[in-house]
Amino acid sequence: MKKICIAICFIFMTLFKTTDSIIIKNDSKPVVEVKEYLSGIVEIDSINLKTNFYDNNNLDNNVIVIQPSSESLLILAGHSGYGPTAFFKDLYKIRVGETIKIMIHNRVYKYKLKKIEYQLKTGKIKVHKIKDINTLVLITCTKNNKKMQTVYTAALY
Image (cartoon, rainbow, N blue to C red; front, side, top):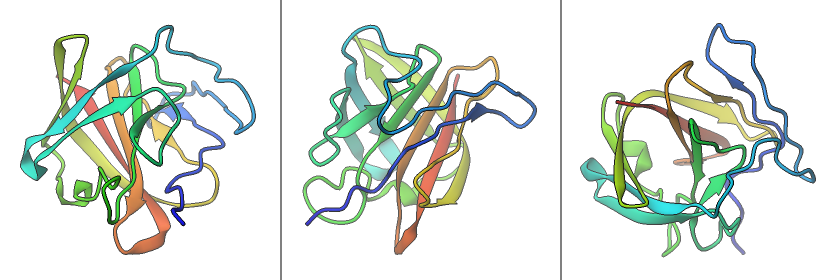
């Protein structure tokens, strides 16, 4: 039986000195919603990753968009580990400074990885929104550690 790598009860949008926050409970509607169905491609050349993502909440088969994604914050989650749905299995190999490409509606957006952090799997996760910059966040389980999840934060350039 597959275990879902992440459980998100609360997402706090902050960056070091900002105070804005969005709180989401598992059983509630998102405070900020993407206004249309969102799908695209995430690509990281250094690990030969090129896969689709969808705003459909089916983490067992896809990389998914996590709410409260918006025009300035895109949060993607995917499985790591083994098997055909472990789309983020090699994410642990990327380093700060690398480029992550997002393709949406025939446009390519390039993000530079700024931060990698590890958080305990507690039923909540803290996601940093880089102030005044479009931000991409990738979330997956931490390699070889069932108690941790890894959060990758990147800035549009």
